[in-house]
Each structure stands twice: as C-alpha cells, then as structure tokens.
Image 1 (cartoon, helix red, strand yellow):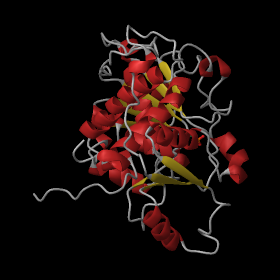
Image 2 (cartoon, rainbow, N blue to C red):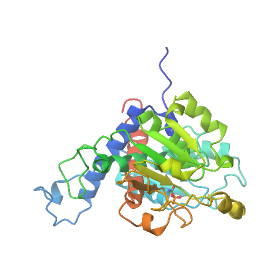
Image 3 (tube, protein in one colour):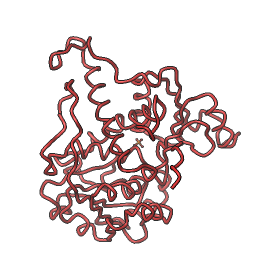
Length: 343
Ligand SMILES: NC(=O)OP(=O)(O)O
C-alpha cells in the first residue's frame, strides 16, 4: 500500500492514529510540567533547581505568526491559543468576524489565500490555506477539546484503578510520565454536538466502551457516523435513549450544552426534548462508585446540577486548563519544528 499523504490539516481526531493522539497528549503533559515550573516566582526552589536554571519548553514559533480566525465567541479556545503561542515564542493574531473582510466583502477562499501567505499557521479555515490549519472548533468536530479530555483522564488514572497517577503539584521539575488508562466505560449524556463527535471517533479506538444517551432526533449526523464506521469504532459504541441505562457502571460521565451557539431559537423545544437528561448524583446512582465528570464548558445548569459540577467528581476545571497544554502541543508539533508524521 502506498504511504498515506502527509497530514496538512487537523480537522478531527479521526484524522489521527491512536499512537499519535497519545503522543500529543504526552507532549502536552511535558509542556505543562515545564511551563508551570518556569512561571513560578524567581525565588521558588523546586526540587533543588532554582528558577534561574529552568528554560522555556520550546521556542519553536520564534518569528512565526499564527492567525486565529474565529467566527464565534470563545473563552477557552481563544485563551489557550493566544497564551500557548506566546509560550512558544511566536505571535498570535486574533481575527474575529468583525475584524476582517472574510465572508462580507471577500470570499473565504481569497481570505485564506492571503492570510496563509503572511502567516505560518491558521487556527480555523482549512480548505484554501497554503499553511497547516488546525480546526479550532466547528459545528461538527472539536478535536482539541477531546485531546484535553484524554489528557485529563490520564492524569487521573489512579481514580480508575491504575496504579499510577500524575503529580498534582505544579512544582515538579523531574518530568513524570503521563499514566496509562485502564479500559473504561465512558458515558455521554445529552446532545449530539461537536465534542461528542470527536469522542465517537477516539474513545472506542483507545479500548474504551462508549455509551451515548440522547433523544432519537438528536443522534450524530451521517457524516460523523461514516467516519465512526471507517475507523471500526461502531462495535464499541452503544446508543440508547435512557440516560440511566447509559451511565450504569460508567467510570466517566460527560455532557455538553443542549443549546449550542446558533440554536437559541430552538431553546424551548430542546429543553423539552432533553428533560430527564440532567447529570445529577441521582441519575448516576448506578454508575461506578468512583465515577468522574467531564464538561467542555461553557456550562448551563440544565445539563448538570451544581452538586456534580462543583463536587469532588468534577474534572471540569482541570479539563479546561488542559485545553491550553494540548493546544500548545499541537502548535509546537504542527507549526513548530516537526510534523505529525514524524512526531
Ligand atoms: N470548550 C470550548 O470550546 O470553550 P470556548 O467556546 O469558550 O472556547
């Protein structure tokens, strides 16, 4: 078989073999440990070495500009991108929908050609770009979110029966390995949106059982289901309507908003359709006793109550922070000194 063409753009985790997904999150974990140590006050003593002996993890974006082309409001994706480009020594240029001609006075194709002629990477806009593009997030896929989720679960491996855990301290200088996960049962309760779609093409290939509970009319579109089948993920996915059935014995319960951006006019119908899907202790009483909770944020109280969201099961804010390290890892690899093929 001829070798597969080099990966130019990253649209979804379906584009990556499992080995590369794992290497990206392991690189992210290394960058997290190095960067957090570097940011400590100069007087800090960290396992012996002083701040003065530490170095930034990489300068792979030195002299490079990364265009962040956003057509929607964002907190995590934008802040993760801007701060990680800065840590890698590059310059990020935020281009919101009100800032540039794209889609108003100029076609997306022409904008992409021009911007990619002046920048070394684009966060968004794949089709017409001459430089690598990473999908920041789209209605169908959210690859960098699920990379952060995988990293977070691996950091908490001991909660799932693994003998190892990641160091909780931000002051580790001796780099630790990111622990491996045992096979898990992961349940997603709620709407079929971009985060779920990247979970569908990732978790089953990583050896986890994946269960989804959503109303019949809110199942994944055929385009997503085709990628799921191509990758052989469908054998490890169970799709049900009853959320209690989905979470039975689950080690991880995840959800997302029921009303994504652009769906505000469907609010009433959606609230009715998802009645009974709110993640609570009562809903999950037959989950694994040590179950953990994931949510990509922003969160609305309809899909998860405060007890779960802010309680000890919640990995939500660790997951949010890990958006930065996984985005930084992808930038370092794809826009930096190497490619995803050789990494
Ligand atoms: N989870 C996520 O993508 O958040 P933002 O929309 O704030 O970027």
